[in-house]
Amino acid sequence: MSEMFSAAPAMLDSITKGEDDKEGVAALMVLALSGGMDHDKCQAILRELVETCRVGGDPCVIGVKPQSLKETVAVAWFAMKVQFRDFLSEGLS
Image (cartoon, rainbow, N blue to C red; front, side, top):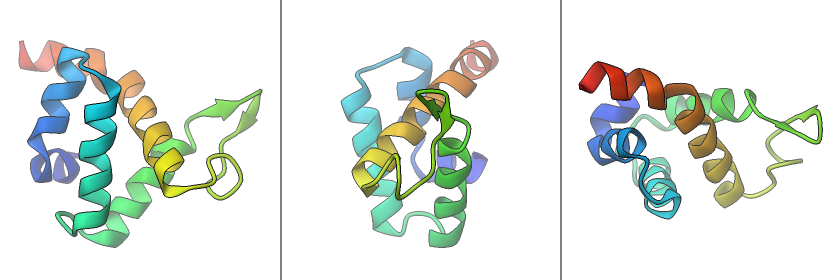
């Protein structure tokens, strides 16, 4: 995660401030597509974050739910906010 946040520090700030999800999702999408981070590591982190979520009681599976890259990034962003917001906010205060 530190590699992801160091490649896009605005995401860290967005999570801790609870800003609009559209900006955070866009920043994560840019990171995933731009090569600002190793592609394999980025893919592994996105997959790990998505797998922490459930839809209708079933685990999220990339390609099923979420289906598209856009949906995958949105779910990963949600998971990142839920998992790390309190920790990051406390650590940065």
